[in-house]
View 1 (cartoon, rainbow, N blue to C red):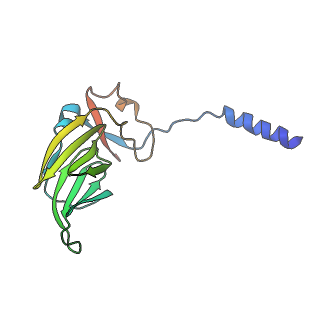
View 2: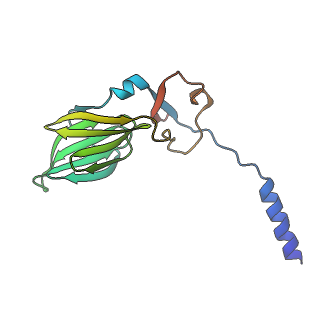
View 3: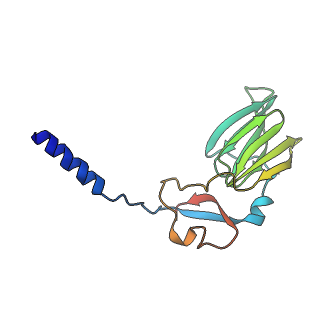
Length: 162
């Protein structure tokens, strides 16, 4: 009988414990909606720092750089891949490729792109498909940066340690 009382007390106690959200130790990096929608471009190759998914399409390798974009390599010689360029896609966490179309998240938007001869062509943008990017420590957004408090028409594209 004492075990049942003890278990009942523990259940009652844990039901009364209030869970508190911890504010993140990171600061969001904001971008205006206008800048976000014109931010996708090809730039010079650069070092991979935070690699994500890797896709192969023909002789090309596409390597996601978390929150920044996609590295493009010519992989005709797998023992010696050649860096071709970097597709800047702020807020990018995930990509997939079907045929010759790259589908990527551009922060909260879904974009479809075509990459040819080291140029990029935006095909379509669906706005606000994804939730906002969460902080690496999974903490809550600081009050000043909640959607109602931060500057109008801004989107979180990354998080950085202050």
